[in-house]
Length: 417
Image 1: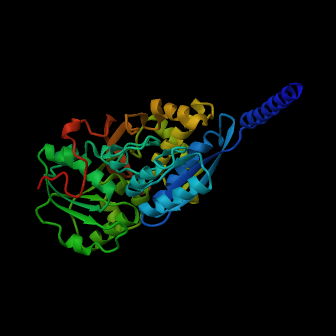
Image 2: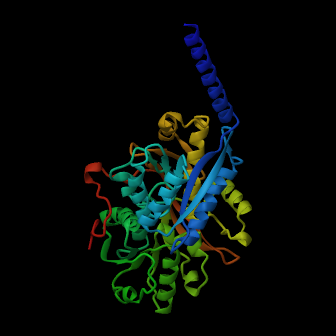
Image 3: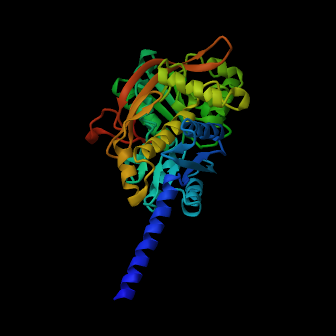
């Protein structure tokens, strides 16, 4: 009996000591690993690098520490291919043992990583910049969160703006994958409803180099082009369109008028002045939180050190998603125990303060937020930027359309020839 009691006491003391060590480690701030994935190769490399800057800025604003825990960022690169993004994510999760994952950047990548997240319920996944509708609208994952609005939400208001410009017939030129499908759906849902016509859609490969065959098919009777190309693809198209003598007015997808494209060098660049577009940011938005964000970005990443005159769309969305990850950690005092249940509940209920306004999540853990209709302008120094033409708040994923009437974007949907 005495021996049994002695063993029990010894066991309790050992357990107490272990708990004390564990508690001390937590109190002293055991490092917390966050994986960060962006597209650093391929057509979106410049935007991906700026996405990394945005995420790093959100962490730097907290001094690299949340609730007494140092945050260790473990970075990885992809190239806009879904399988490459999943393989990079798998390494971060299964080998590097990150506890939270932020990324990826591109639309098809986001859908693939969302699907992978279902196999890793112990990790919380937060989007980076991916803007495809299907990431959260189709078969959502319970541990995947997206605090940025997506491609279709970004285009709300552009259809009306196009018709106000007199663009009654529009040809669409867009990359052939999930994100541009979403952008085109967001534009056409409004444009077609108000009487606009889209007689031709040209879907081009991601990472394309030669656009001569597409340029040759532009009908004479269209009033404008809607170009949904990003990064190097946008630059290649604009250069070739300029060289061909093209003179159709142009509208841009959200990534087509991001700073990584507006700052390319070329004659066609000046003809972008007056281009209307829509997206989650406007370079010249005068909101105080936006101005503070831009000032912090410029201080941390001046043009001389590789930054842009204003944060790109990618810097913004990665900043927002990393900020959400960190604000959620602060809300639960860094506690990720119990399968991260408290952390995920905090994320789900969060009203996130961003540089462009508040964001909240719907039942699919998808952001409801602000969209800007914009116009490209040129300043005295020759820099191009986007100014606000209209601000639309509380844009949800079905764009205000009844769920039973809403159709997700595909190559063929919507249609209004």
